Image (cartoon, rainbow over the protein chains, first blue to last red):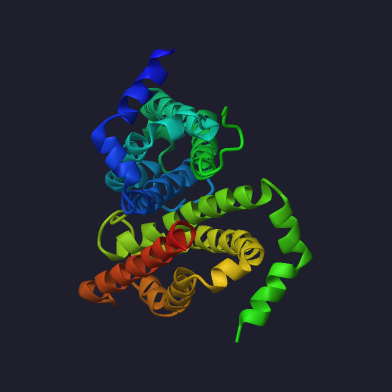
Length: 168
Length: 158
């Protein structure tokens, strides 16, 4: 048995995990908050990425869009992370055996890596292209990768409801 | 009164095709959620600005003009992916209280957006009292959150 599977199976037996999964209120409540906070996080990340790509919000310098939206993106992803973790905590084996859950997880990790790579390289030369309508290739690249990955996260997240490829 | 119409919707070729397919409905739901994120981003960037938050170095009208095309595309995408869901699921939706509440709030939110909110958001700088613009942004957030929440509950609780 892999360590990852043992971890999920271990959590599965917690009394609080069982309580969440057997309660009628927790799942719809958490999922609804998860969707609404996703709108806050992903919506404002998309708005920022469109600016970085050079197709939206062009009347505002990129650094300003980034700085002003960041606290709200952070608020959104914090709510997303809390509700998401409780959802998994409540039904660990359901998620463990779902391919879309793992596709989503991997895409989130890649989206985070893309964000960090952008901040530690291309973003250093921000002063040169902050207000430009035509952005450097690597800035646009970071925006496209981010848009594709977050779109994938949203879509695979929705598809977790379907268990077409479950092993059992 | 609308039941014959909903029954007819559910019997159309499109509705039957969607129901017979394993993945069309699921993919449609996933795309609907993606369009929601785009739409919500374009709405929130303006509503936060109306509240005096977010992009506050820029005039409201400018933020609104920049967000407008994405708001419209998001709305078109939501409609295009929403109608097939309604068609293939018409009888369940007809008997779902959440569906009708969602459509009611949606109608109000839609009219509000293109009347009151648009007028305030496009007004020249300094012509709208801060308290008024804050109220307009707040009401917009509440209305659209209401649409999203009741929509999610159609699937979860109906």
